[in-house]
Structures are given as structure tokens and as C-alpha cells.
Length: 307
Image 1 (tube, rainbow, N blue to C red):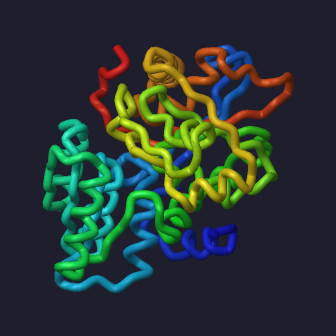
Image 2 (cartoon, one colour; image 1 turned 180 degrees about the vertical axis):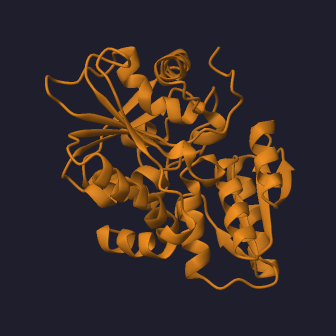
């Protein structure tokens, strides 16, 4: 299990290659009745937090002439492609058809060979592992890997520096690598809340039906949160710290994206707006003087998706 020591080591390793993404305080009444602190990770290289885990994995491992291989709905693939190209390695990305044109263009633009398939994610993950075994390429899992998760956890280290007074932090969940890293950093020092869409409720489903349960993904956030299950490493961390799950409908995600645009002229992607939706929809009403934050984790979407 990873913890603050592994996350600090990851931050030291990757920091020279990262952007220091900003935070922003949104005034009461704009998103909810209270002030909301936003960590704007959509301004990171490749437009999402995923580059943190990709860089940490590549910098910690040697690569052969076969380069690196990943399986991804889009953001992880773009991050691996960016990291590989930056470090002088080739990259191959296996991608399900649900990945939209914006994310496919991003992966190719960062130098990846993109293999689009109509296979389901579990089967496609098998193809990704087979490719790594047969070619010697470094396999970079999108979430269920200690180096990936430690890299993602570095965003929480930065949030604590930028927004040190938080009581509660909302984080979107797909495969769980991001929230697993965030919870590993904070432990029980603040309340971490997992937020999922109705079409991608991996964590909510395993809480109800057990850790081996898989889902069929759907809905507006599927291209970024569309894992069929939550990773075992993340599940163990979230259970250890009693992280709760809130599930929101697509219409609340769309409204959250629109509200963020209206109040700050920021366009995020549906997976990022998912974390904001409990506040903008009123599903979660902060207590008086509760200091809340939202991790806006990515921005790779068509700019009019919420209209």
C-alpha cells in the first residue's frame, strides 16, 4: 500500500517535468452557498492529472526499444504518449471505441500509435498485457499500479499546499487511481468524498455488491470514468479510510459543467464536472463554515459538451 512517503518520492521524481497547476477560490453563491476551492488540474500537460502517474512510472523504470504500452479511454493514453515522447520512447495505446475524437486526436498528437478496438475493456486489457509480454514494452496500467497511484497522489500534496484549510475534498472516480492516491496522501486528516456518474459507478457498486463486481459503463462521463471496476489497490485504501461515494446523474454533470463555465469561464470535461455536481445540484450541502474543495481533474472534451 502506498502512503505519503511514496507520494513525496514521486513528486521529487516528476516535479521537473510538471506544470504547477493553480487553485482558485470561487465565491459563495456561484457554485453553492459557500466558498469552493478548485484545484485546476485540467491545465496540466495533456489536459489532465494522468500525466503524473505516467511520468512517475516511466522515470522509475527503464524502457526497451519496444517503448511503452497502455490501455486507455483517452486521458491515460495521452499522458503515456506525452511522457514517452518527452523521455525519448515510443508508445502504443489500446483504446476502446467509446473514446471520442478529441481524446483520440490528443493521443496521436502526442506521438502514440493508437489501436482502436471494439473489444470490451477487460478483453482489451488482456490484449495490452499480451502486447507487453510479447514485445518487452513497459506496461503502464491506467490505475491499478503503485507507481501510477503514487504519481496521481502528488496532486493531493499540491492541494494541501495551495488550499491548506480544507475540511472536505470531492474527487471523481473511475478506476480509482486518482482518488486512491489522494486518500493515501490525506488519510483521515480531511474528508474525501468519491463522486461517480450513474453510468460509471465502480466504487458504489463494489461497496454494495463486493470487490470483484464489474459494471457495464455508459453515459456522458464514460470516456474518462469508464472503467468496468475499481482497482484493488484503490479499493483497499478507500475502505481503510472509510471514503463514501456519491452518485450523480448525467443531467447534474451537465449542469455542473455549465455552472463552472458561467462563473469562471472554465471548460472542464464531464469526468471532472462529476466531482463538482454534488455541490451544484444540492445533493451535498456543506455545513456552516465547512471548507470544501473540488479537484477539477481534466479538460479533454468538446468545448460545447454542456450546452
